[in-house]
Length: 162
Ligand code: S3P
Image (cartoon, rainbow, N blue to C red; front, side):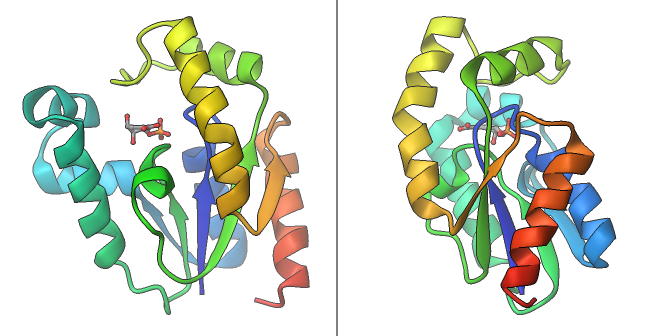
């Protein structure tokens, strides 16, 4: 069983995913990290050298390369479920308010190709938020600190009888 964490940049998918995988005793895959390691370049460098369409293809290959029958938590890149269909499993949307996400991204050292200005980020947020909600079985309040977010996910997964 694969647990997919989806959501906007800064929603905590990587951090929550790692904690959740530890709690469940599952493997953990961070799609951005996996792609970056395979290509040998940062996500930012892949975008600027090869373009966004190429990155979306790499994301599709990453999904195809995952064995969704294994016990795994996948932290997806923010655009992954928007551009590509995810594999089988449970999809949890880490939903956070725009101002919370923006503040977190300002504090994060990681350079993100799609975070150029607050205005552009907001437009993307408004466009994507309903899509994430539509794609997920569960919407999780990710404005809270990581332990609380993990607890919420464990609760809904327990209902799903993993
Ligand atoms: C993207 C989000 C990033 C990364 C890439 C594109 C997006 O991942 O995959 O910069 O389209 O929202 P995070 O959501 O982990 O920042």
